[in-house]
Amino acid sequence: MPAVMAGVDGGGRSLDCRSFWKAGASEGPSAPIREFHDALETGDFDRARVHPKFLHTNATSHKWAFGAISELLDNAVDEICNGATFIKVDKSTNTKDNSPMLVFQDDGGGMDPEGVRQCMSLGFSTKKSKTTIGQYGNGFKTSTMRLGADAIVFTRAIRESKVTLSIGLLSYTFLRRTMKDDIVVPMLDFEVQDGQIAPLVYGSQGDWDSSLKIILDWSPFSSMEELLQQFEDMDSHGTKVVIYNLWMNDDGLLELDFDDDDEDILLRDQGQNSGASTKIQKEIIQQHISHRLRFSLRAYSSILYLKKFENFQIILRGKPVEQINIANELKFKKVVTYKPQVAHDSQVVSAFVHLLFLFRIFLS
Image (cartoon, rainbow, N blue to C red; front, side, top):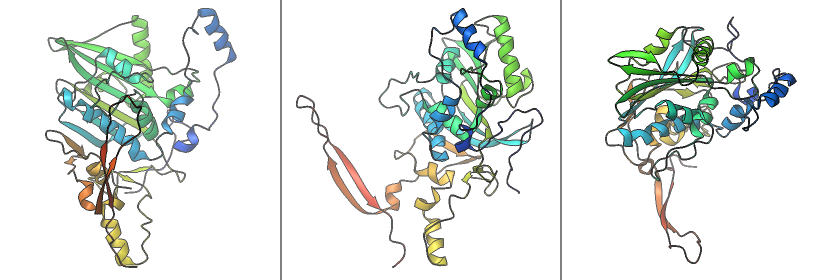
């Protein structure tokens, strides 16, 4: 199957530049100066503004696309304490332009309307436990924006016997195309009572209708019915993240390769250089986990967590990922005791550091 090439649909719903490392530098039109004067007159400057380009700048903390994916896997792992048993990672198709989308879905506790707003906010975290991976309220934004220009979140939660559905759109494309000078995140909330879904309006009905229009215009979904269909494969609680307008490389090809392996997601061009000088050496190296994790999401996610899950699975493109202890794949183990210097009145702490090396798989 041919690789997907860059393109702009007739509706202008994608960015002019689809290369991640160039998207932040591309200069689109800025918001008119008049908007700032209006904001001063209406008192809208009682809070700090965050320009949409910060979404891109913030995401550059992930040089490697798989590092961004690991953030979203971590979010699901953090939900194990709320009953999560899986995180599904798969490909879907944007029916508006037939482009691929990256989908993450878990069966964790989900987010209520307040929770999803906190998720979409910068630097807001409710994870107070020392055992959770995410602590700083930034991973969702950096990871989604590193993988694609746009993301839409569907989440279902039960809080105090109240069932809510929430939808939030974080769209770099929308913000840049409409010349916003602040990050605007349209959101919709619903309440489920006696099996019936009804809109849950926190502001005005006009605000709710405006959010719906923006989401339908700038998301892969064209109607309210299509939006609500995204909840049909969820149980009583959980979260689905759909990332679309995926970034491309400088050759106009998707960074993520969905076609070469139906049970994996590959990083394009990452597995070519093995450093081997002969065909046999190259084959041996390419089969080793230390090489495959550089370009295979299945290999990378298999060694990502040192502790083996008991009742949780990473399901990649319909097939569970088998966890591997990376230490078992290495040699020449050495254990070093690390004792950091602390204040004289602090408790003395130490940790065991395991040093290991790759197999010597061919002779010089």
